[in-house]
Structure formats: structure tokens, C-alpha cells
Length: 136
Length: 410
Image (tube, rainbow over all chains, first blue to last red; front, top):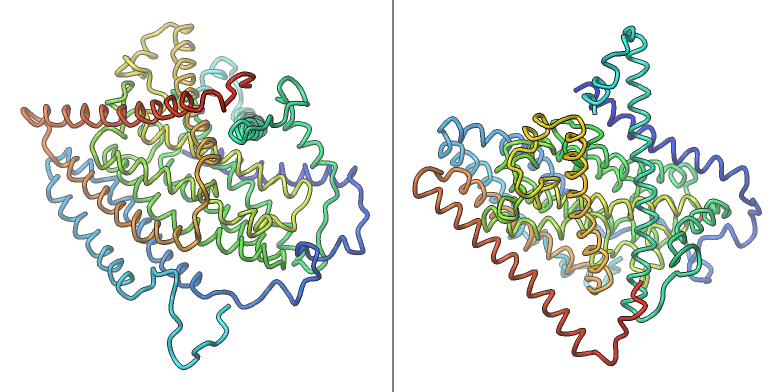
């Protein structure tokens, strides 16, 4: 197993080294005439108004939170599902199935809650007193 | 590939230190070999894709460099290598430079666990498929980093969209993987293939109706995770210039595209391994036993045949992925999210549960016939769908006979 994981490590290391070498070798021969308009931010020829770092839509943030819950759930589900076959081979299949169903039912309940709350809606209506306010 | 190293060095009588050194060298050689394969494949696919795109849009496509333009990718690579590396002054210089270092190794490391043939996998780790889903997430961080650090409105929107899309589609993708894993009872890529068989009705896709649906869920999810059309919103040319790539030039730019084309191979290889029987040869029930019983020359024959099977299936899927890219229109961002969260995720739960029930069902007596007939029916449905699609394409080509040119196909 140590061999297999050292191989994975080598893939990551060599992948990064390849980028470094390719960019480093390129730096020796490619032209370097920086300055002027070339260093401006590209916005289809217009001069950019303000910075690119502006307040961004919070729906992406909500989505990231939903994802976080589901991803942790997926990580926990992987081992449960993997050992299920062993249980079936030992003749305890139905018990394992009931446990998996219970496990998934809790997750689906959370999913239904999110759906009901409207967190999965992409197009949201603006509520509250700020009617017609800025919606970036 | 440890077994190959052991059999190679069995007669060398190396000291422990030399063995360690040789092992490190072996690991480097294999990794470099896979890197060369990835680079060649990514370049070659870029050419194939442009040729197919040209045909589909009634033009020729690149045909100047080498035979039929087949060396175009080398020329493009060299050109990008010699291009100036522009880093706009408004960017965050550290993160802007760091992003390719996350994207490229993330895409490359997925190759480590892919089984190219019987025993031909760089790293046969036990958590194979789990590892691949985990390591490809590294790409999201790189893309988000690239999008944010560019300090450009296109880049920011592209980067955030890409992150939202990739993380969303990881959920149905993971559930579809679990649908198969529950049947095989393992995460090891080699054993996942061993759990299937050579003929189509042994494949996981036709094992029961739920895995059949899971195949399409997984296909859609992994296309979205690889930012391929119809899910290529992060780099929608018509609205976002080039998305998170807008400020990148030259070699840095190439590394992102490089990863994307290499990802086409990962997509197809994963689909082949999980659903389409991987390297299994039709007619051979236990390839391991066949290889163990064969002579040393026969061993090579069987291994190479399994590699060939894998390459045939994967190349067919690569072709399909490219065709999809130039056939389907791009989705809108809200449609994309609704499709993931309101359709694919609930369907993923259902397929996982249904597949678990199929596993628990008894297999003795009359039940054996039940399982066999389900597999047979699913295979027939699958082949009917494929035949229907081919027939429709055939009919359309003939209906447009005088308006479509089939000469000069390459």
C-alpha cells in the first residue's frame, strides 16, 4: 500500500514540477515587453470601471453551504455502502438495507427541508423593505 | 505496478538501499510515462476535436501542419511556449501564478488510479474511485483561484460559476458512483472491473434498471465536472469572453486547456471502468486465472488484449463526448442548477436505494432467472437505444443527401 500511495504522491509532485519546468524554460526564451496598455485588465477594449472584486451574489454562498453538508454526507455514505455487500454475503442483507434506508432517509429529510425552504431556487424574489434596491 | 517491479528485479540480488533507490526510479519512470501519454492524448484530442467541429460546421478544420493537420497540436504547444506571459498589474500576482500548479496536478493525478488493462494501473489503491473523486476537486480550487485573482469581471463570474457547477454536480456524480459500488462492494478500480464481465449483459450498466439510469446521471455529472459542453458555462465564449481564463496567456493558459482535454480521457475511462466492463474481454469469465495459466508469451497477449479492449471502449466514449460538445446547445445557469439539485440528486438517491434492494434480493432458484431476465431486458433496451440513434443519424444523412458532403471525410 505504501508503494501505491507513494505513486500518487509522485503524480502530484511531477505534475507540479512539469508546470514549473515548462514555465521556467519558457521564461528563458519568450519575449518580455511588458508595460503600457498590455498590462491593463481586459474588458473587450473598454477601460475597466472599478475593480473586478465587487460584491458577489450570495446565492453562490448558499449553494456552497448546501454542498458542504451533502459532501460530508457523501463521504460518510461511501464506507457504509462499500461494506454492505459483505453483510449481504453473511446473510444479514435485509438488516443492512434497513440501516442504509434509515441513513439515507435522514439525508433526504434534510434535502426536503432545503427544497421546502427555497434554498435550491436559483431565481429568488427580493423580499423586505429594500424594494427595487441594488441586486448585484 | 509493484508486482512488475518485483518480477523484474527478482534475480538482481539488490541490497536494501539499492532496492529503495530502484523503487523510487521505477515510480518516477511510470509517472513520467503516464505524463507523456496524457500530453500526447490531450494534444491529439484537441486536433480530433477541431477536425470533428470543422466537419459538423461544414468547414475543413486544421489541415496544414503534418498529415491532415495531425501535428497541429505540437505547433500550437510550441507557439504557446514562446508567447509572452502577460500578468496584468491589477491581479493578485501570487494566486494568479499559483493557479496552474493546482489545476494541472489535480487533473494529472486522476490518471494514477485508472486501470488501463489487467494489472496495468499506475497505482492500484484500495480507495481508487473515492480517490479520483477527491483529487479532481483540486481543480475547483485552482479555477476559483484563477477566477478571483485575475481581478476581472469575466474571470470572477466564470470562476465562481465553475466552482458552483463543479461542487453541485459532485453530489449526483457521487451518488451514481455509489449505485455501482454497492453492487461491487469495493472502491478498488481493479476489483470494480473484476466484478463485471466481458459481455454487455455482464456490465454494470445493464445489471438492473437503476444502474442504467445511474449511467446517464454519472455521464451528465462528470461532463459538468469537466466543464464540457453543454455545461461549459464557466467559459461561455458568447457571454464571458473566456471565463476564468480571460487574463491568462501563453503557457499558463495552455495548462488549463491541457487539463481539460486530458479530462476527456478521465471522463471516458471512468465511464468505461464503472459501467461498461473496463478491460474485460468478451468470452473470458476469469481473466486473472486465464493469465495465471498462460505461458509467458500468452500472458503478454492477454494483458495487451485487455488493454486494447479498454482503449476501444474509451476511445468510442471520447468520440461521443466530442460529438456531444458540438451537437448540444449550452444550458442557462439557472437551468443547470435546477437540473442538478431538483432532478439528478433525487434520482441519484432513488438509484442508490434501488440498486441496494437489487443486491439484497436472493439469487437462488427462481430468483436467478429473474436477475438474468432483468439483465437481458436492460441489454436489449440499451441496444435498442443505440440502434435507434444510429438509425436516426443514418436516415438524416440520407435525407440531406444532396446538401451534405461525405467525401474528404478526414
